[in-house]
Image (cartoon, rainbow, N blue to C red; front, side, top):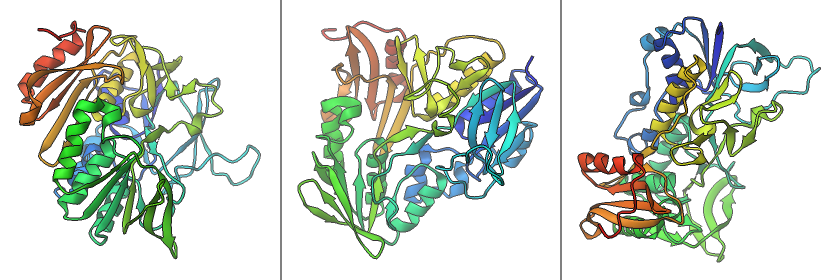
Length: 412
């Protein structure tokens, strides 16, 4: 019988797990631990509405204090998990702070004054998310990453006073930041070692249109270009040197080269760590210990493969599924992942997975009209659908092809 459930991570996945535990009837002790000092908030708007200034920061908050109070939980914000003893069912927490250090690790045992707190649990949900990858020189003034609300606000402030922006990385985050910066009227250069923005995610057909869209809006693309170093003066970045020795002048540099699962605090736990915390199909990493959200690497039986999904809806759904399984449901988590990206007047929406070796087929509309949908086919089966300004009703119908693992549509 569960008497105390601890949820580590107070973003979308952790909040969903905590709320679902209560809604599904768990009335025992509940502790929610968040590394950041802010109440749970929504991350996708950070590089869209917040960065562009369309939203005030308060709009990203997921639940107000009244809703949080209804959880009847011990909510600990600004506190970091630093270790886990699986056999003893004990979590180790660092001291609370208004500005937690993400890289902090627990001092060696036996040291005095560590301030480490022991917290026993019966059930544990690990929803610690990911951390932004960094490049050497990221400590320079003017160099930014965007993962947290504080990151987004700091970058927003920098963009208002720095007209020349270099974005390193042309994935989802980098292209969204580039679009937001251009919307503010700034001089923007997008740098990536790949041949086109979002090509690693969606292949050549879509990537070429993404590249054209950014070029049409005035972004300079430096594709097939790596970064050698950041150029600086008196501790502030002034430029980005590329592998061909070109130096791009910059007042602001945004590093958007992906993220790594926040599992460093689990290094001595003996839990299986790979590309995230490895779990079975029910998202269980060990008896009574589950993972949800960006940190979770689990086996998805719908696609017959292990996956880790860094998207908002998955975090919420997985948090709810984990809560049910912690309470005894023992059901596999087999979603069709969904995610979206807003850039200029384009909304990209995607269902499923997008293997690099998949073939693509236009199944709705026409790319020349900039309103279409593409199916991604792997081994004769539709595994993903991407919509470019596609009407929601049409896209939902196409989603069913992925859910049903429909046969290849080529020739229909």
